[in-house]
Length: 224
Image (cartoon, rainbow, N blue to C red; front, side, top):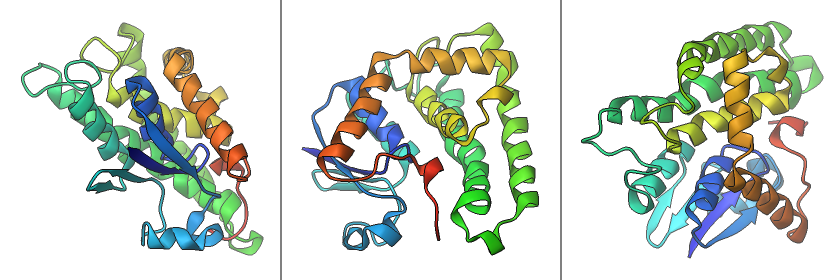
């Protein structure tokens, strides 16, 4: 049985969404955010204290985009995964990592210095600078998404989940109104997917059953 440690709307939503797209059985363990502060026993599971932690037999992983790649390659070749002999293999890998390294990273700084740090340590200039950084890089997708429905290979892939999570986080932060039209339409298409909706429902259900607050990462406050 696959086990996924997760916080509501955290990076671990990527593998949760993947699992729902694939229809694989899994156990979902929901933790308050940040778990390194609010769920100290979790450090025995993942000494980094970060989310996700993913277990599949002897396989242990902690990087959300890598978990998506692992699941797609193992369980969905030529569908959610793009194979090495397909023309879009390179763009696929690029977008898979673009979602995390380029789009999610600046948002973590926005969150940290606008909500997570104590009031006296908050930095409005950092928040503004990294908001602009995120939006400027997001705009590079606009011409592509004006021409095609998904990012690569003519189909929905794990790369769309990686980038889609960055849009989920941006929506939570309050940046949806600043999406360009093609990006906004793309985000709406992703939200309409049944597996996306099942993943949202699964985290809400598991959080309620496990007695964890259902507010998202973007709504968390206090020391990070």
